[in-house]
Amino acid sequence: MVVAFFQPYCSYTQPLPTIMKKIILTSILIFIFNSVFSQNLIDEKYYFVNGNELFGIKISNDSIFELKCNSDFQCAVRKRFKILKNKKIGQKQIFAIERLDSMRLTSNPIPKDRYRIIGFEKIEKGKLKFVNEAKSYTLDSLSKIPFEIQFINDKFGFTYYTESFLTELETDYTINAEQLEKITSNFENYIELLELYENTKTGDMYATGIIAELIAKEMIKLKLSPLLARNRIEEALEK
Image 1: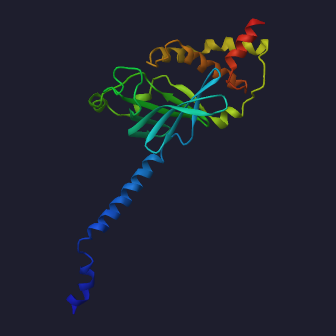
Image 2: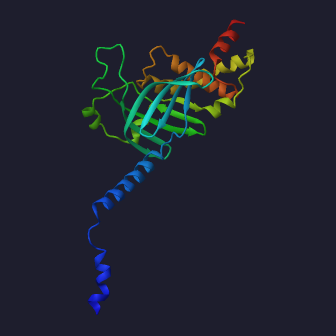
Image 3: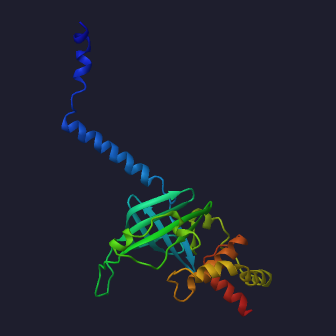
């Protein structure tokens, strides 16, 4: 009687059919995939302002896109990268990525050193620090680098902003003498940031990026849009 009572239970301990195993495994993989990519710091597009142009960044599934946009936030893809792995701790996240699009007009359109490590840090609502060193790796050399969140510590990163943050700023304005004096005198307060910039391989060959970075910081303090701000500063200097 005891044996007969436990027979139904024992029948369920038999190995699962192969099709059932595949369904369970697929469900687990989908759960893991969604968990990993839903934890990204970037859940919308962010933009770096340089003159009248915007350079954007966005993440979609397992890819990272670099964008070039006009002042109306209409964008075209410049570069596309595949996410190989990522690590997120608090408000910081790093990615190991592989460039997918070929490098045109070169003798080596798909180089072996097409791998990079980049990092992001949420500064505050609508602001993101983007550490994007001008360093590339082969897959072998990439595997030998410690993949730790400290990668973005003590490194310069350009500040990217959300569209909603930028569109809340005043766009129709001129810069008066008092504002001009305040903007230019405040540039002296960025000594530490400039030292960090000098010690980070940014690829900013003509320093246009760092100039745009500082202008954006000062314009935002005044609640003014950094778009076209450089032209308005130059006009104010000529008066």
